[in-house]
Length: 553
Image 1 (tube, rainbow, N blue to C red):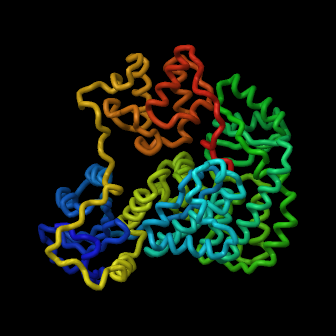
Image 2 (cartoon, helix red, strand yellow):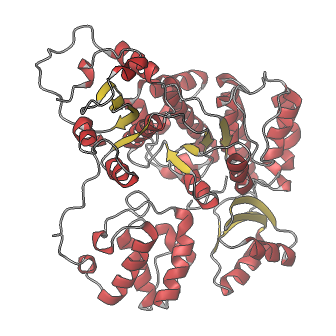
Image 3 (cartoon, rainbow, N blue to C red):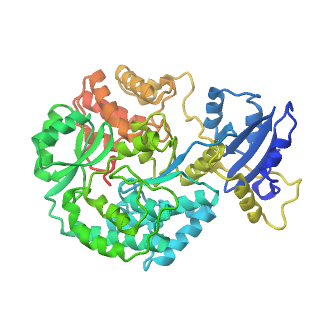
């Protein structure tokens, strides 16, 4: 019978897991439960396994697999919230820190309320601030937290808390990196500067950005383009005053420069049906024009205490590792503002040079995971955050990291023992009911299995069928299983970076024309069907509304 977290006895040392005689039919297990995750080391027929589970019924799930489960069986188990992998040395892992662009109201609140290590980290940050930084988690106005003055410290608060949760479980990455602003966060996690210095740097930067944005005349701007590099080269040749600020993937670029030139380039790209979108920013980031910050930044950075990194730290503008002396470190930091973020090269360097195979993203969502997957499809990416369901995201990340061999089982056992009440519940007490917040996602209710998916949309069956076929091909799920309320990103695992390709293919198959901005309002399968059917029927597509579907910083 599954045991409740409060009554799990202390774990013996992991070496005891090898004591089961070879050939035993039933697996022996060492287990611990912490923060809603079940961790276990299993031994059966001489083979060791690591297990991380969101379900208290993991024993029944694991027992049903048999002695030598294949990859398909393990994937099926993972879909039910149980991750199992051979107890072998884990490949190198990189921790990625996300930058601006994905903030959402309430971000971090579930972490603070459910994970003691994350809560303690947030309280340490709050103790350094002279304003109520924790109050950001209760702000409901997305515009209030989207401005740089609040978004920068808010992101640091969140990512520092997420990292503290993983660090408390013994996570030891081979490398840290960050995308744009995330690089400044990553520097603190890599040990180049401490928490106090990190807060000072990011709080000061937030104030500078707010001042620059307030004085901005909007003569410059930024534009996202989804195209091959030769299209970008051609654009730069035609408009020499345009600069590449971000090389995010082989097919996603952020251009910056005079707004008039960007608008002219956008018009030319649109004529060729190349997705491009002006971003709602008032400055051109990662552009030579940001050199105005260099002198001020150099003076302030030089006055802070900095050290050689404890863990290698990647530079987003060189794809090399950070140096160890303070003058060079300060130069790398100031160079970040006025040079291109070469994320494509960074992923390639981590994969080929550093041997990184697993990537963990800190931040509000899974933005960098999508970029990494587009750069290197063989990479295994995990995200610490999920909009609207942070508890499930954090628990799943911890469970998967343990199964993959990245967490310290002895440390998990010590933490679990330290939290155990002195007077535990009687052994014959009924086990606690499974936590609904971590249960595997159930199939969408409301339709009998034999009802065609197209019928649920109540629209043109032939066109809907074509759209569903396209979505099914993109996400790898049966068309009959798709429902209008399925979230494209979170239920079907479609990255936002894939949306432009999805749009191009939809235009080809359906014979419609849809503006790229219409995709910014698309969240569910039903949204996508409405936008594409509206375009096909000659009706106006969804109202244009600029958002943050593409990373700008």
